[in-house]
Amino acid sequence: MSGTGEMLEGGDPAADRRAFRRSLGMFATGVTVVTARAGDQMVGVTANSFTSVSLDPPLVLWSIDKSSTSLPIFMAGTHFAVNVLAQGQVALSNHFARTAPDKFGGVDWTPGVGGAPLISGTAAVFECRRAVEHDAGDHILMVGHVERHARFDRDVLLFHAGTYKAATAHPDAG
Ligand SMILES: Cc1cc2nc3c(=O)[nH]c(=O)nc-3n(C[C@H](O)[C@H](O)[C@H](O)COP(=O)(O)O)c2cc1C
Image 1 (cartoon, rainbow, N blue to C red):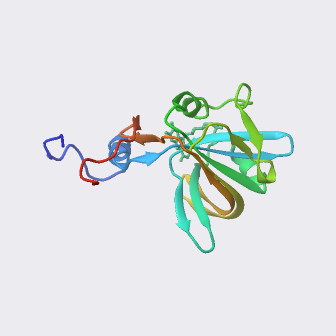
Image 2 (spheres, rainbow, N blue to C red):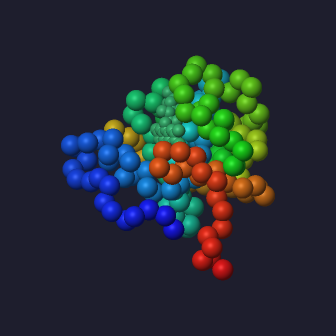
Image 3 (cartoon, helix red, strand yellow):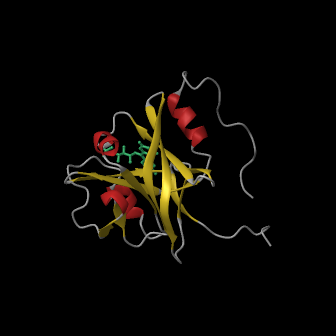
């Protein structure tokens, strides 16, 4: 264990948005690249807002910034794929976190359900039919019905406190 336990910062999110983001960043997550295809256009966005929602029916969600240039393609496609990144895919995460006209040049992928690109070398994938969207402030919650999933024997990539982390077993886990 490290850290003194003292309160570092806090208060009204509206008063200091960066501080709010840093508090949110204390929630450790995995890292995904969510992809979709509509017509001949493909998009992919690095996202750590992914979460499981329901087992029966099988539902997941992620949230996309309303200012994302990829949003119109996500809304035009019938499906999206959640690619859960492996520990060795930091460069891929950074690549899909930047706006670009075509993010798939030089990326190894295969088409999934509804044409959504499945990125090679990931730890898991969830192929989803778009179920429903919910308006949520400056983001849109995209809920997907999982039609197919897979997981692979690879270590996962984590994101915590604004930086990438590697997972190790907790000493108290037994
Ligand atoms: C670790 C990480 C997690 C991110 N999570 C999200 C997210 O959940 N939702 C989102 O809209 N953007 C998220 N972003 C930012 C998008 O990846 C980025 O704004 C987007 O790829 C920009 O390209 P676009 O114009 O195609 O949207 C995240 C970025 C990083 C590095």
